[in-house]
Length: 307
Image: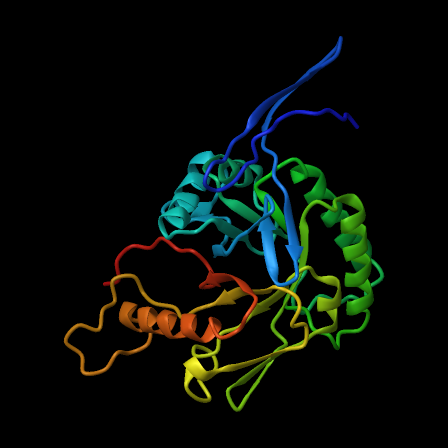
């Protein structure tokens, strides 16, 4: 470890300042471009460089829809991240696995914060004796590669796992402790979708939130589940009210170019329906104090017009 004092300018989405760092000895030289920033939680707030921030994001898969291929280089990353930035995003959630290094470095250059995630989700058999070791190895590799990438502000360690799964809680708690031992400079998150929805009351709970810096929730009320009342009067019953609420997935889908023009009703899958749904959902989410982020839609997509 090398310690030094310097008057550094912090990296941020508004000013993604980076520095060239050179390390040399008699036999080798290492050169990298890195930034410096802080990220933390205080009560219901997320602070970047000591200042409260609202995270505006989309979920991105590692795919180039124009090539119908995986994103493999800076050009591919630039396509997706530019689209995210055009939407007004200051962060992207890279689902549901660590994306290639070009994606993370391009986001850092463009001033976009990154949520990096392990492929630990849904029906994983935590009782399999080989699973905990594999998960720990993936977590170590994710941190080792991107520990110096200032754009990465969140390590997400699981997505939509189920509390009743044998050994799930113990495995994820051990994973969380191991991650924090490796890197205590970022937020650690577990995402769930085990909430309840009855009589227009949205109940958020899961024991794993005790070990998560954010209450991260995937929810699709109004799309997969019908509204149970006026969306603007939805009540939130969060069992962890003193933690920031992070809506990590929500949204309704549409086909690009499919319009309801001339129709007496607005059918689902039209752009108008998606627009109306998003406006209604925004009002619903605004009723819960401490909400620090909305990740619209499941994935950012760039498609050809609907025919």
